[in-house]
Image (tube, rainbow, N blue to C red; front, side, top):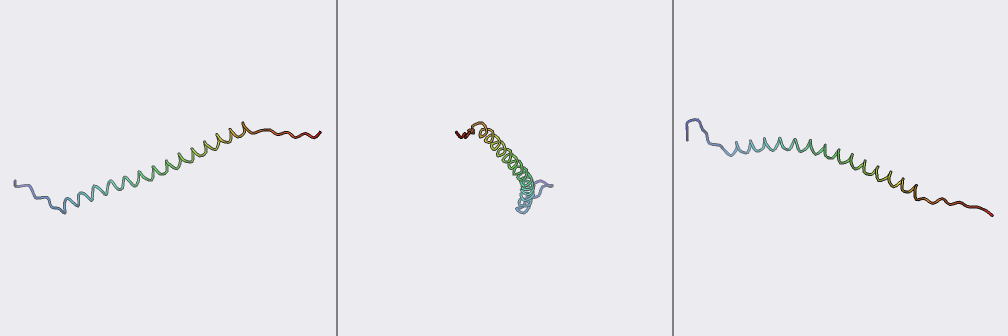
Length: 70
């Protein structure tokens, strides 16, 4: 071994691994909440569009019944 190098211990490797996974976990949590919010917004818009299309078709196809007395 050269004069300036040390051996890397298991504790150093574990500490670095925990540091890296902690950063990734924080990013995953923040991204997950954004994805859930966007998914809910898309779901609401989809339901509203289906409702409006069905309402329009119902108005077009509804029969007009006229009752006359003789």
